[in-house]
Image (cartoon, rainbow, N blue to C red):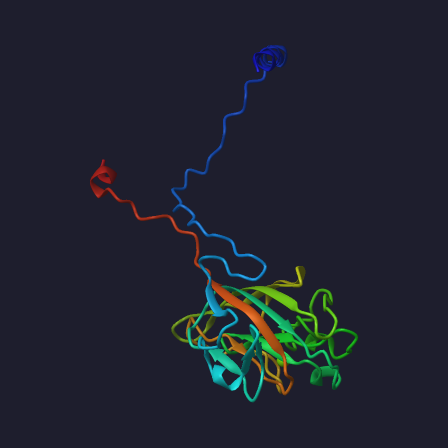
Length: 251
Ligand code: MG
């Protein structure tokens, strides 16, 4: 080390350069909370587990679906979370039926609806052509996925999604739109895509004001889609704590 110090001192003398002074932002951020990351099959420590393999008690209509061997299978109707969410990170694993039946939108269809309104499409898009903004990973009828990262029918697939809720003012005017960033099997398929409104089946997208939090829904589209390992993390903005010592602050 001493040798290196001498070399540095010599270099400074030779160049006439002083070491740069370090820049720090000086912003008194709150300390980031500790989170224990999950594993391939478990959630991070601060996540809300929506389905961990045992039951769908976190969901309205959860009793209509079948749960066996750690897997929930869609049946009869869609399900929606009992808890409401705004900005969030969602992890969900899904598999289309092994036995290929139907075509296009009729094959392995489900969907993840944020706030009960904004659908990230779930579909068997392995060699199954349909309209591009309706295939797996599309924001339904708004944006195709950037690429098609689909696995074969019956194989487990993963969505990791960051959802930003839209903001409305008290008169119902849109202040900022919803955004979705999504990875499909680890591949980026939506990159901060700006939503144009609700993802309707029968009309163009449009916004209608709604509360700041809403349900996360899973669609039942007639196919026995399977799901496992579903968890969500609520996202909150970074904060700078209020100053704690008003007396000292008056100086
Ligand atoms: Mg769908």
